[in-house]
Length: 309
Image: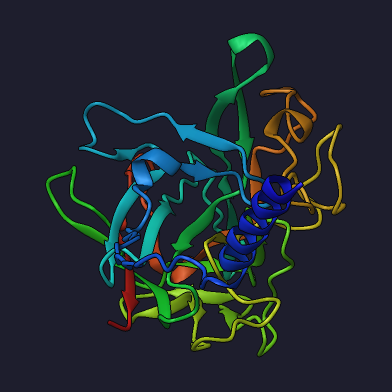
C-alpha cells in the first residue's frame, strides 16, 4: 500500500506541475508582398465598331485604293487622344450619289445614302445591310476627361475638267442626331449624362462645328448615367427610316436596348423594304450655284476629336 500511495503522489505532483507551467511561446515573423495591376485603354482594333444601340461588331467594306482604314463609307479607327482614354472609332463619308439637277426651285435638298456594312450571321455567313450614318467615340476615362468631336467641310469642287468649278453655296446639313450607346445604361443629354449633340438643320462648313461632346468630369464619384467605358454614337436617322422587321424604337433600324444582336435588327439585306437614303443628312444646293451636268463634285470632311489631358 505504501508503494501505491507513493506512486500516486508522484503522478499527481507531476500532473500538477505540468498544469501550472506556462504555455510555450512561438516567435512570429511578418512578411509583406505586393499585388499590383496597371490598366491600359482597350485596343480599338480589337474592340471594333459596334452598330449604334447594340454591342454587335460591324465591318465596313474598305477599298484597297482609298488608303489604310478608309473605305467608301467612311474612315475607321481614326485615332486616340489623352493617352488612349478617348478614341474616335468611326467617322462617316456622306455619299449623295448621282442625282437629277433641279433648275426649278431656289434650293433643292438631296438625302444622303445609307452606309453598307457586314456582320457575322448565324452559321458563320456574312450578312450585308445598310444603316444610317453615325459618328462613334469610345470613352474609357471613367469620367475624368472632357472631349468633343467637330467637323469641317471644304467647298464642293470639280477639277476633272479643264476648268475648276466650285459650288460656293452648296453645303451638307444634318438633322439633330440621336444618342446611342453599346451598353444597357441609359446615357442621355441631361447634366447627369454630360453629353451634348449638334442642333437640327446645322450646316457643315469650313468653320468647325460640334457633332457630339462630353463636357462633364465626375471625379471619384460617378453618377448613374455617366459615360464610363461606353462606345457612344451620334446617329443620323429619321422616323421615316423604317424597315420591314424593324425593332423599337419605331422609326429607325437601331435597337433601343443595348445587347440586341445585329441579326435581330436588320437581316433583309438590300431588299426593297430597306431604306437606301435618309434625310437626316442632306445636301442643300441653291440654284444660283449653276451645277454643271456630268461633273462630279467633291468635298473633304475633316473630323477632329479633342480631349482634356
